[in-house]
Length: 239
Image 1 (cartoon, rainbow, N blue to C red):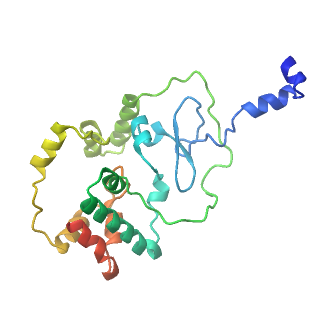
Image 2 (cartoon, rainbow, N blue to C red):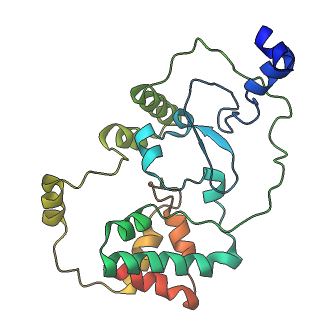
Image 3 (tube, helix red, strand yellow):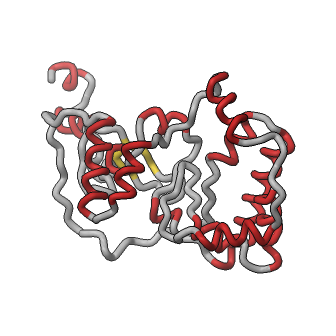
């Protein structure tokens, strides 16, 4: 306090400058504030989310160049689908032609959304009970996985819960063992398929299937390849 008085600052101004704004740390998924949890911001709407609330690990957070929340990914304006299909086709072409780690990374982390006007969400509560407990222990990846499995079991989706337990959504390291396994699974020569086969496979997949790290769902692909102007995206998928 003495140093604040000598510097010409009051104790109230010093404490207010150090205290972060609770609204900036509000998780838009769980509607809580917890200073001990790691957060990530959506590249489109700038909303903050806890990593544990959306099921993303700290390793994935460090590897993802951009991240979009589920609300932004689910919206694909019909007037912008041609541009989205063009960007997806360009990412596929660059990955196949350049064969560089950067080109493949852009394809695997592809998550595109047309800009939207920022509007207030009328469904969000006006008053939120902020959770500012400093005694809460940081949640581990195993705790986050167990909660996700419990939610899937509560919804009756046993297949999704088994998929969460038996698979990993992190990007594999480029080791010799993994590369040999990929070569054994994917033959050097591509299969003899046409665009109609790709379109049939996309339409046969349930629209509600879970998206991967790239944020692209089968419903998004079916929207991007419909119509003659967007056949370029389908032809790139054949490659």
